[in-house]
Length: 323
Image 1 (cartoon, rainbow, N blue to C red):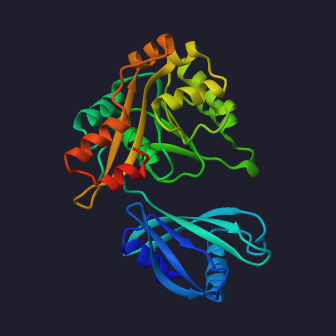
Image 2: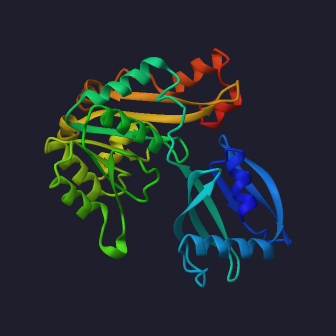
């Protein structure tokens, strides 16, 4: 287990995939590095079973239970640096299960808010606002949570009090009072947001809008004079609007609360680095769209094409995202 984790850390992997091979006794561990899966260590299914049991023990997951998905987290110290490993298990058959380890650190990525400097500055400038709603969107692995944390740091630098509710707390940031969802203890997004509103925050950070209740509390918090930053799964910025409408948020509420929606993709550049490509919908553009059902917007598709034409990303990278 240690050799797998250390190898992943040294190679800057974001995830470790540990699954037994269903058709033979030898399996390969896979690392996700810069968005791509790479095969690495070869182990027997018996070894994998033992490693998963140890991971579950360390993450305070029920070792005897292998027929339902479970999730847990533990700290791992390597070279005097602390890492947080989130272990998620998945039952495969009556006796076999696999797991994925997500690797977090308290350090924020060196990647800027956007490969486009103008977009980066727009996002940084959002920290000047005192109230409203800011939403980061994108698929899993697009860095939206990291972008949310980075914007939170901008608020901390302006001496703002930030309280968060997250599931789970992915990065421990000095200057943020962080709460973690704990359903067993009765702490969920709904009642946590009610409590946070009574604790005099300047900024409320909500890990993710997952349902209509959370969406409504987020909007209510924005109306109450607080600034709220959060994430939401959607295809693009307009997709965020449609998703919120589906969750029961009215057009007028969106018009009065949403400051900015940022949809992003983490792309691999031709010089083998990772950068964010962002689509930004600002308040006036959102109001225009809600009123006229159309908007002049530089889309992710257009920006991907620009980068591809300039030789900053490959055609295959653009096409990977459906552009």
